[in-house]
Image (cartoon, rainbow, N blue to C red; front, side, top):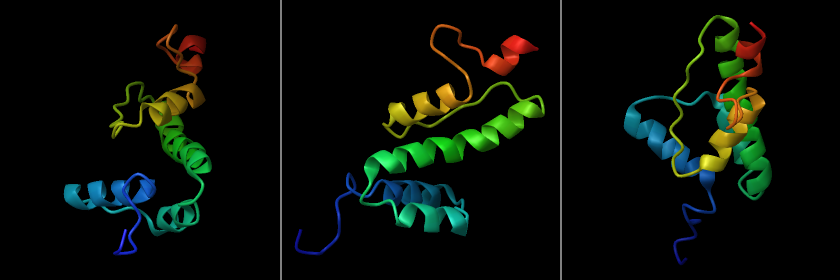
Length: 101
């Protein structure tokens, strides 16, 4: 590319940033800093994205929230990883926490 810009595909966080701006929301500065160093490591980016998203879900689940909606943005692998981190499997459809209670 003559403009020096990377494609949308090679800069996954750029797409999330644009999506956030269109929705009128902000992304915390620490998340910007975290993902800025991951632009050249897509596999690590996906692991960090899943972990970063799963943690607030885990905290909400501890306070009684038991249903979540994820916008996959054409990245179902990350959503599947979030579900696995929360203990939700395709076979169970329920979290380990929900099964224990």
